[in-house]
Image (tube, rainbow, N blue to C red):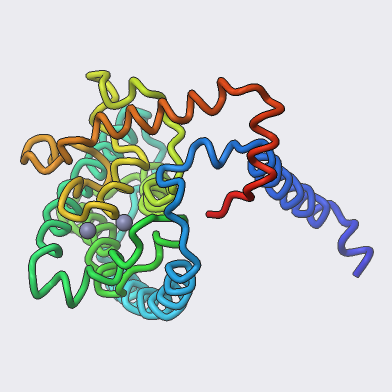
Length: 273
Ligand SMILES: [Zn+2]
Ligand SMILES: [Zn+2]
């Protein structure tokens, strides 16, 4: 056992775990997380316990549904990748096509899931979380995960059948995007700069606050990757930009305080979630 732990691979893992744990601890002690929290008083143990149960049970059925679908499509040659070396521009085109198409799929199905009886039957479970955290990402009805996650096998099948299979390099980027974006929008912490939602170049890409407000106010901000459809259809929360400014101002104000004062507050009131 000792020899195994001391072997290169284990040491590497231990180092990584130690690095992540100490980064989180430093973040808590210095008030870094407190300053960046979108809803400072939003954490509830009851919500977290509910999310754990849904994540475990829902995760099992989601794996079953998506796993069976993927196995069927692969076994019947309906998902094939182009493994030849390709230029960066082709990888970029394929990735952007996926990104925009998924965003469209997600926006419209998300709005549909907010209508009764679909809301009650499918989407309500995810909205039990009014102040998202990383676990909220997987606190989802398996049917909803199948509807959203099903876009990837559908996209890959359509490209295969139409004779334009996605390159392996683009697939490597596409496959983890959903889970990374899911974790990012539910993180509960805002790290992007104040100008992000004002600049013509960046305001189209959502940040954590955008989806956080969907959980807090329900019928606004339906987009999953971008703000495009919400801006086009007038479903972006009217006060989103001013609230975003307020969150960024609160964060800046925290960092302007003397270090000694920040440390005293952070240690006197341990920050949760
Ligand atoms: Zn929703
Ligand atoms: Zn959500």
